[in-house]
Length: 222
Figure 1: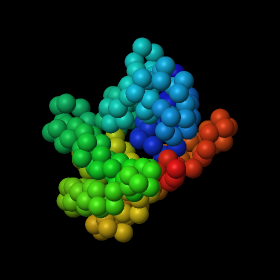
Figure 2: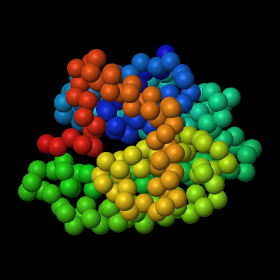
Figure 3: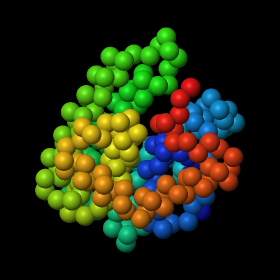
Figure 4: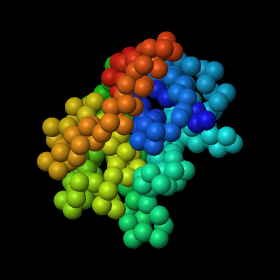
């Protein structure tokens, strides 16, 4: 059994969405956001106090993009991964890493310095600058979608899940109107996937069942 420690619509949504795409059994352990503040006992499971934490037997993982690759490799027949022998393999790995390091990272600064810091520490200029940084780097997504409906290998892969979460976070931050037309259409395709809808429903129900606030983490305000 795979155990996923998760906050509503945090980066842990990536592996949750993957698990739903794969139709793989899992147990979802909901945490209030941020867990390092509101669930101190979680530090015993993950000293960083962050989500996601994925536990699968002896395997313990804390990086959401790596989890997407791992889960795709566990079930290769589902076609969510790309084999090393495939010419698209390099592009696939690049999107997986870009999804967090290049696309999600600046959004976390927008979120932090617009909403999460105390009033005296808010930095509107920092938030604005990193919002522009994100949108500039989103041009790579726009360009890739000029060649097809998905980012690589001519089909939907774990890379689309990983990048899709960055778009979800940007949507929560009100940046969707500034997406390019191809990216906006891609975001709509992603949101219409049944597994995406199941993941949204699963996290909401689990939050209610486990007594955790069901408000998406990016929408929380101190």
